[in-house]
Length: 139
Image 1 (tube, rainbow, N blue to C red):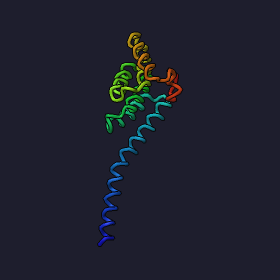
Image 2: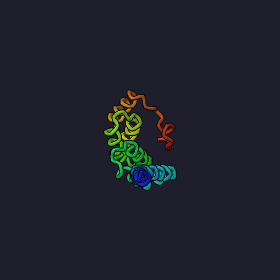
Image 3: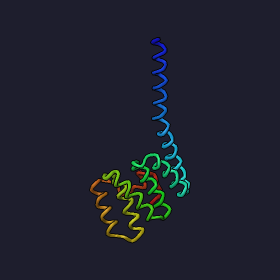
Image 4: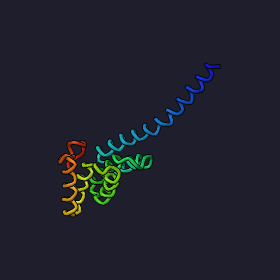
C-alpha cells in the first residue's frame, strides 16, 4: 500500500514539475530564437520571438528590453521607446533600458528626453557602451 501511495505522489510531483518547467523552456527557446534572429539582422523575426516571451510572461522586463533593442537596431525608434517604457515600468532601476531609450530619443531628435534618460542611466551606473555589455551591434 505504501509503495502505491509513494508511486502516486511521485507521479503527481513529476506532473507538477513539468507544468512549471515547460513554460520556462519555451521562454528560453524564444529568447534564444530572438537573439539568433537579431544577430542575423532579422529584427522583425526577433520582434515576434521576444513577443512570444512577453505573451507568456507580460512581466518580463528583459523581454521588453531585448525587443526594444531589436526595434532600435531596425531604426523603428517609436516601437523601441514603447518597449523600453515597459521595461522601465517593470524594473525602474533598469539602467541599460534608460541608456537605450536615450539613444532612441536621439534618433527622433528629442534631445531633452535623451539627456534626461542619460542622466537617469548615469545615476543607476549603467554602462555608457551598452553595445559591448549586451553584445548588440553598435548603437
